[in-house]
Length: 226
Image (cartoon, rainbow, N blue to C red; front, top):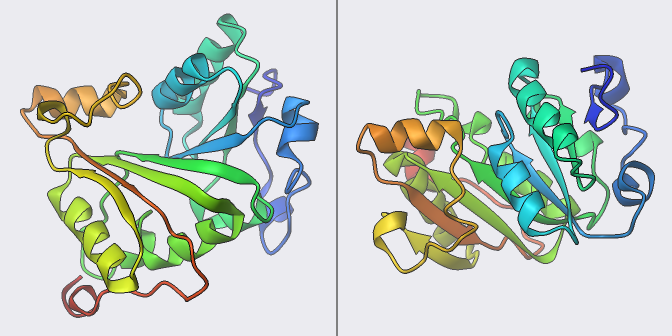
């Protein structure tokens, strides 16, 4: 992937307790424009990043994942299709604070993340309080977060976290494809989603805001039993 100009692979020392050189400047330096920037976290092979980029050429999209083999597939497709509004960032999402500046991101998509159901792994949930506090810094006011998951536990946990913190739920469906919610963008399917659908699992969708200044905290029930 070193030959792909649209794949960013920082070294650990570039991001560990440091701001990455593109922080706050993704539009101008990477995409060479001032268009809105949208993230997909845990992008896998980039199916959602690519699908959204095709639908919204007036926006820039960054797919983030740590697995190089997965990113390679999406990056190769983006190059073949000459999608200039796509890039991929290979890093752990734990380092996300190092990459994006204040109010730099317009929207965040979280597509089929590991629900981290084992006891003591709350901190690793991509919709957990720790990550939401990080997202709030670089997500513009009014910026939407989208969660698609097959996990009822993660879906319900995230809804409870929003209620606990007084955050605004915009759209929620526990069975996306049997609802009136699904539109052409929500019908984009990742590799993992196709696997889950083949297993007969229902897809959940949650759209929400994290505007506000109060620190986001965990629901009490999850501290005790999560």
